Length: 142
Length: 144
Image: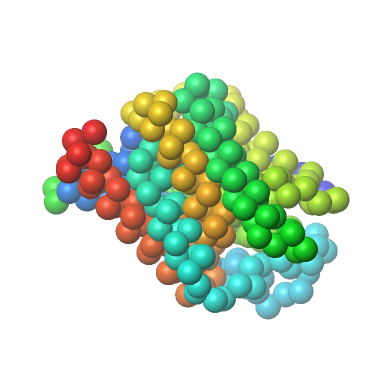
């Protein structure tokens, strides 16, 4: 059941990205280009997603189990440390270079474009580099 | 700043955004998890028993979205302007950065702000900030 629900959530998420225009890197870059001909659309994508998602997420925060009976695993980290700041700053640089973040990267894999596949492979490699460094640093917990 | 009114698509942005919100809500309500794509994909590289199938299913759903969309309507064109070297560099940076920062546009941006998490709000401001700065640098300072 969880697997079916996961697939469904991923599918709906991907459809949303396509409808919103987020799956189109050129449109994402037009949003990030404040000094050029700015396309504010993606601000509304975020606003729409948050407006709809907030109710459900805030409601589920009080529960210990999901509707399907899974234990709630909402993030517990609250600390604003160097990792979250530096990592996010870095992510923004990569996002600004190509106009692709992880969700749209997967949708672009579905578009079967060579450029989309190259970005996805590089992103996976980057995540692999992170895992490698983490395991070397904390062999006991990784 | 000049707003490109001809490129501005408020209706599809709001509708698409709402659909993304529905997906995030579905995932939290049914599976009790955050629809954070970088975390879901990154977890595949740290395989644990019983933890793989839902991740693969979510990824498969995202990848299947263009096919599903094309069954009902003409799939919108996408345009990737970056060259291959740039895509490799960008992909590597996005991969490392999102894992180090424990989230991306979906986990911190959509879900984190929805939960009103100060940590995610800071993360979102950080990646939006360098996203804007990077495009300014590449387009207006370097002329790439």
